[in-house]
Length: 345
Image 1 (cartoon, rainbow, N blue to C red):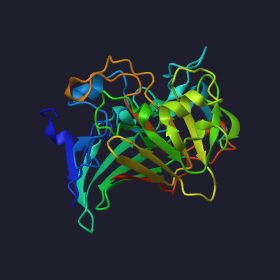
Image 2: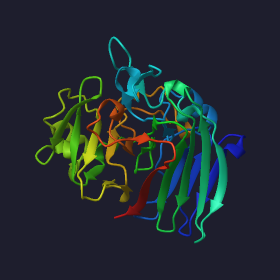
Image 3: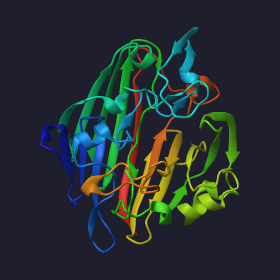
Image 4: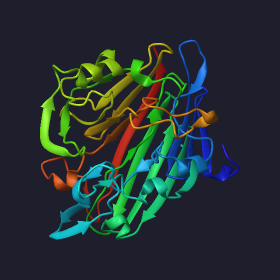
């Protein structure tokens, strides 16, 4: 890491796992875990310095993104009879650009305050806090936000998001870490296996915004049933009109099921299970990366070098009232939690 060590914090647990976080973007910057032979490696993409994150083409490595992650159509929404115009910063959307991941100066660009904690059971954690003033990037309400990471003794990283506002506003947060369970960002993740617990596809248009249609995935490989690799599942899907190997799709977990997904690398044996209380997950396999960013150790980050698995609320919820709401009212506390369990098989 760089010389500004007070911007980084490393947690460890009784099993020797370590996770490092940074105040810039409240980022998850590394996760060292063993493979099936006991060899340790970092399974999160990123950079060696804060400057690397600040100047990267891919801005969201490991960051907390918000106020609202994902896209908002036409960079606007109506709330309480008033139209709010947000910052337009998405590369998709013609002629009007859409709003993406909280805007140009979203939470991923903030310098968060941090405090190291130890739980009652002796587990190490860190709390990041920040303030988003009324009108920031176009959003209403003064928002106080905290993100707590705890490295549990069962080899899970727990992420708890909490927030309060003095006015009605939309809040939908996620973490944008890219995982590569091989531990080598030079190796594509196409050979990983991904299994989603019962879920459906939130159909999106060419601007990656929801059409309102929810599609059952029982008979399509885009449902990631865990029986074929990620690369093969994408190439064999009948639902992806463009066969370029890329995916940036939103999934809705079915009511009454465990909201979870499972990723595995058959070569190293490393596994990742994510359990969340968020009703949706966004999956992006880094198909837009082109090697222009050089990550840790100077390794070029190319297409398919990692996969982002982002538990969150439904995309563009402010413009789709039929979706589960992410509206935060004064006097309420927004809470979202996800657990990332690392293991071997």
